[in-house]
Length: 85
Image (cartoon, rainbow, N blue to C red; front, side):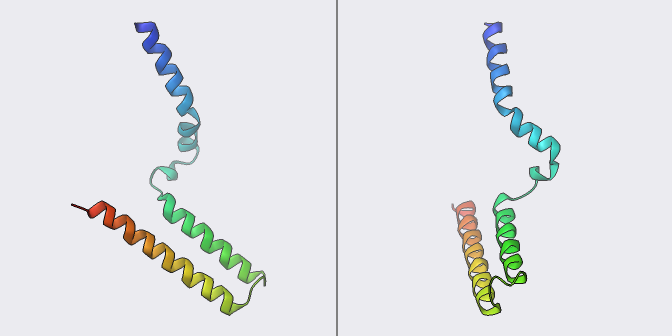
């Protein structure tokens, strides 16, 4: 029975090793909101495209506002789920 438990523990730790290693290398991930991080990445890419001249200011502004609206809607949806009674 002990051998089975040790074997299962080793298998579980091996499966989690990549995730644990990722947290060790980048400890900020533990407290980072992945939803907000994705929003920041998209916004940064949009800004970069505008600064490189790949789009005009009206298009940039429209896409930025749409991104902001989508993020705000997602946050409200998440808050509704959290505060449901």
